[in-house]
Length: 196
Ligand SMILES: Cc1cc2nc3c(=O)[nH]c(=O)nc-3n(C[C@H](O)[C@H](O)[C@H](O)COP(=O)(O)O)c2cc1C
View 1 (cartoon, protein in one colour):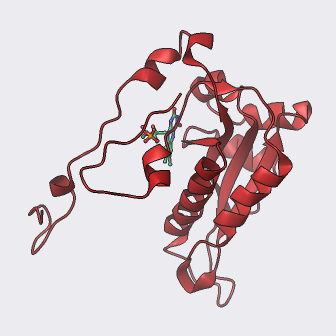
View 2: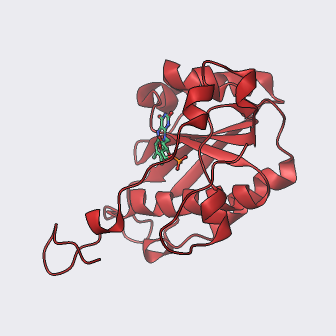
């Protein structure tokens, strides 16, 4: 199953191929591939090179750890993410280690790291589905996340499944992908004034 982007301008093949499936094949992800995805995240740019991200991982081979992390997702996400090969919780450090001042770019930098991770996953034949839908209080408690660090999102990583194997989820994976036109978010001169 593939669900390629339909770009208006030529872009990299990996960006075209990346998409977020709901139907995963409950097949383990090879350790080397998981580490390669995390390595890609590691090399993301970040403000002052703070690297404010952390990833807590749980592979499906470790059933107890996997189920514990699954239990930190909102119910709607648990339904489909239970078939992923690996679950990850992302966190961000709130302050710069160099001087303790607030890091306004932390969310931005986590996004860059996860973007790298997603494209590396795509290159390895894997798929990523990110989730804002997690129980933040529970996640903090379960993983003893300290006060200057915030749990932020979760990620399902794994092999894409056959939509026919999950008829309830299939319509989401077979629906066309949509995007705003460039002119709706690329401005010049004034916010809202289209540049293209
Ligand atoms: C930060 C973030 C949070 C998201 N949260 C959820 C979520 O909680 N549940 C869900 O089903 N999809 C979630 N998504 C997936 C988006 O709905 C999906 O990326 C978007 O519809 C675009 O589809 P595509 O990734 O296939 O291009 C999230 C994506 C991102 C980047």
